[in-house]
Length: 126
Image 1 (spheres, rainbow, N blue to C red):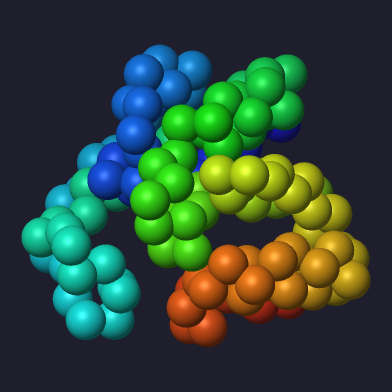
Image 2 (tube, rainbow, N blue to C red):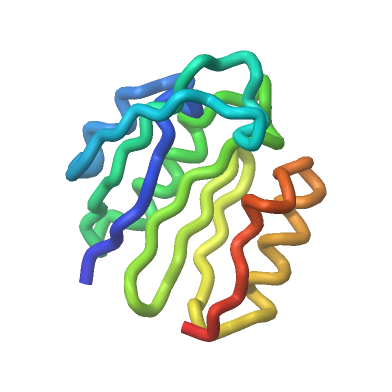
């Protein structure tokens, strides 16, 4: 079972990482105040598909490719029915989607980086 997720092109300092996943959709959005990225005019949002057998290595590659000047602003993620990868520039979380403690630990880390509260992942129990 593969993974689906999103990556914002402007969050990457090395876009060659995109070659390790399939881009299934591209959308461009103007930056708003809620995005909390005033140094940008737009976000280019890629919906991506990642093969299950490559998910660990792709997650590590994405972590290495994320720009670090605005560390608290960026993460990428992809998930399937059972697991959710949440990727920061210095850490990768592989969450069991049924485990609230996993999600809380990741959110604590995200908060310590300054990720905006409205971008935190909420526990859905699935």
